[in-house]
Length: 181
Image (cartoon, rainbow, N blue to C red):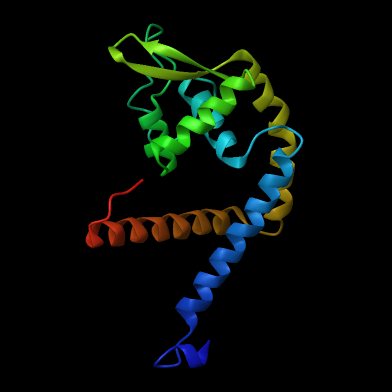
């Protein structure tokens, strides 16, 4: 890498390569865990967001709080495709395909939005909640194994640094005038 840079400083390039390698390692583990269960990692992400929107205990996903009022039992327990896309940082077209898959598997359903006749909400089904519950324990064991030897402080710092990378990338996209997915 030294020959690639003008000043010989390869630290940022090495950090980028390490972040990319770490992402692929975790993604391979996630993909391995969903194999045989019929869901891609993208569909799993959508299902987790829908479960959080349903008010199921656990941390709320970013981008879901605007639709889910956990104190109002009459509030819809679903999200629009657009909300799911924004929360996942992907296109609505991509999410539509993932929702189609979840519906085919009986893990999610589309419902009319009582607040907007033109909109449709996507909600997790009882089968979707059961699927996630079955998937939870092996996932927790796998994450414990892949992050073995990390202290809670190191994991917090890693999370913080990764989120800073995402924020920097989003700022660059805005500067370049490119629309975000």
